[in-house]
Amino acid sequence: MLITLIAGARPNFMKIAPLIKAIQAANAAGKDIHYRLVHTGQHYDKNMSDTFFEELGIPMPDTNLGCGGGTQAEQTANIMVAFERDLIANPTDLVLVVGDVTSTMACSIVAKKLNTKVCHVEAGIRSWDLTMPEEINRMVTDALADYMFTTSEVANKNLVLSGCCLENGASAYSLEIKGERLEAKGDENGKADTPASGLITSSPHNLPVLDEEQYAFKRNVQRVWWVGNVMIDTLLANRARFRKPAVYDELSLQEKNYVVMTMHRPANVDEEQHLKALMEQIITNVHNLPIIFPIHPRTAKLFYNLWGNEEQLRSIFPNLHIVDPMGYLEFNYLVEHAKVVVTDSGGITEETTVMGVPCITLRDNTERPETCTIGTNRLIGTNPNAIKPALDILFAGQWQQGAIPPLWDGHTAERIVEILYAVFSERAWGLK
Image (tube, one colour):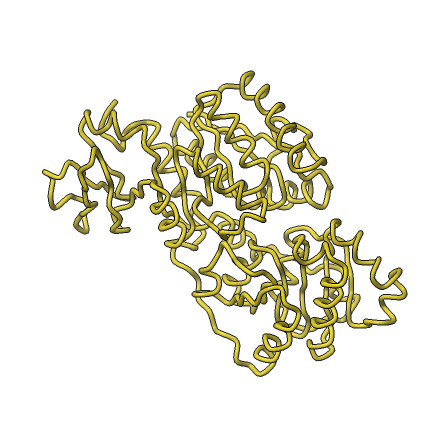
């Protein structure tokens, strides 16, 4: 079995790394499973790309399509043209995409048009906000994917409501086959208690075994498995390797006595007066704690238009420290030891939840609601006036404790590879 893995932008690399390791481990155990890594080049800055390959031990890609830059449409088109050539020259059993960046959607479209199976890791997450390019990428990719792996029960429900089938005996979701409603029921040994239903679950992942007629029908139906979060696999595998960035000692930072901030979404940074109001509310309500702001290249261009050069900004806000983007190990060291993270990122809210760090999200919606309902994240919207009340709760010591969502245990990639190998070898179906 050959899997073509797609990586295009910084968030992808954290999700691809554990999958590569799981494939290598399965191969070492005697399973005929291999991968080919395609880097689309969507992020081409060294700090946004090459550093992650080095730090996370990701092998150099088999090819780099070099499709960085351009508008949304230009980049999508460039990736599709380049990947089509690559996929024709290098046929594969499965194209596996992760997350929700432009590369995810573009490569999924190409693969399906070339009659190649598509697997989407981190499927089913939804913000329901079509002004976000990522939301469109998610919806298109899930609509095309043959196999989908989810991070949470919320993502499961989103896909079921979209008409997809969820195949996991522990989930208690129904399956529709030829108009008959079949319940996935099994005992603790994975054996069905109603074999006549035509669906028998089998351990360890309750994969169904169907008769030949059902199999012929079922193999053409989208399938979903709830397996956990591959990005947390990377976090837990590398947590002991986090390293202190130079800025930590340069600024004499102290444990739980500084703020980390990231901001890059158009809703926050494209309108200068709105950005200015957000910054002023954050800076003036953190009790003079140092704010470390690894600035996104997109934001940097706009930022200095508001307050002049770096020296002028420092004189106005002495506790604000703007630094260059960091590598994975250094940035997460800062996050783990921070008092709070203020962000508009989605992925960071997952990492803070697992590390137990309070997180304030400057967005009106989130595709990761479990970070709020279970974890340490608070979604406060984009109104600058909402920042002070949230920070007041934090400094009063009343922030929610939070917990780690189910299956965010560091073994998600292993589950994904095991399931894919079973499906493609047809062992899970009992057919050769």
